[in-house]
Image 1 (cartoon, one colour):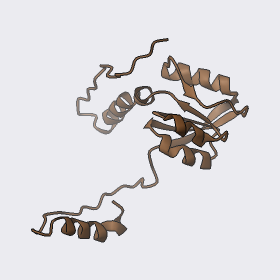
Image 2 (cartoon, one colour):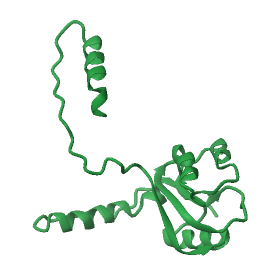
Image 3 (tube, helix red, strand yellow):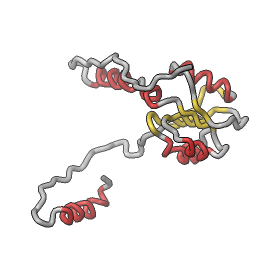
Image 4 (tube, one colour):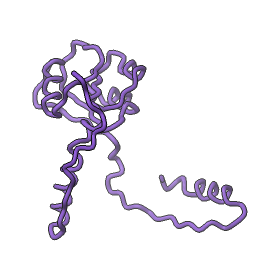
Length: 163
C-alpha cells in the first residue's frame, strides 16, 4: 500500500473488527524501483510495417494466431508490452506514444479502446508469459549462485487452437 494510506487502512481494519482489537503489523517495503509497473515500452531496432511486425511477433513467440485491431497504415517503432491480461493498460500505451501494444485476454469491446491510435495485438495469455519462468530462473541463478534453481518445463496452457 502507499504509505499515505496507512491511517485509512488501519481505521478500516478497526471498523471491520469492532468486537475485538485486531492484530496487525505494518512493514515498510524497500522497493527501490517504485516506478516499475505491469508493462514496459521499448523501441525496435528498425521501423517495420504492420505485417512485418506481426510476422516477427508470431515467430518470436511461436504463435499460431494473433488477434489484432485493424491496420492503421503507420510504421511500427515504439512497442508497449504487458504479459497476461493487460488491456487495462491500452490507454497508458497510447499515452506513452506506442505504435503497437502487445498483451493478452483483450475482450471484444476493449479492442475499440485502441481507436486507430495504435495496433493492439492479443497474442494469448500463456503465450505472452511463456518466457517468464526461464527468465526468473536465469535471474535467480545469478543472484543465488550456490542454490540449485530448477524450473518446470511442463506446458500448462489450457488453451488450444484449431487452425
